[in-house]
Image (cartoon, rainbow, N blue to C red; front, side):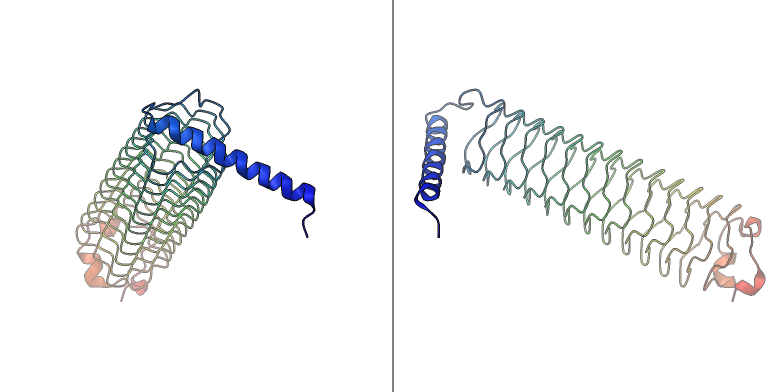
Length: 312
């Protein structure tokens, strides 16, 4: 049972929190779009849902556990702010500065982050389901185990970001810059990566089944052990890529460039390789490759480790 002192402490804390919340909300409702100096402010735990904080300076502020549901933070400065465990669902953060912000376990579901600066932000285990991140800057951001399923990521800059174990199923990453990102064990099934730049990326063990990768730059990419079943890889650039032990059954690779790629142990059952450039490709131990498939490819006779007894 709580003693009197503990109960008084809790009561005082709650009253102070309510007072802070009422004063803050009143300043905003009175027409002040940027009440007070909020830089370095301690706003932990208060409810700011639905307020208009557009253009506010909240840099370095402590917003741990704050409720910002449907809050307008467009153009706000939240750089280096603590937003961990914060509810930002359906908030407007378009063009906001969130560089190096702490967003661990934050709820950003259906938030508008178009054009936002999230470079160097910590988004570990954050929820960004169906969030709008078009033209956002996420360079060097940490998105490990984050949930971005259904998010809109067209033209987003993810260069150098960490997406290990992240859920990117069904996301739109058309024309996105994904050079050098870490996608090990990420889930990308059903995603649209048309025209994206993934050169030099680590995609080993990634689930890319049913993904649209047509025209994508995957040159020098590590795809070893990845699941590419039913993927659309038409006209993809796969030169020097590591495709060892990849599942490619029913994938469409028509007119793609696999020059110097490693396909050791890959499963090519019912894979469309019409017009594929197989110049200097390593086909050692490939599975389910037929003569009919092979003869529809380009430069197949220049492939390495191609043994006729491997071809059915």
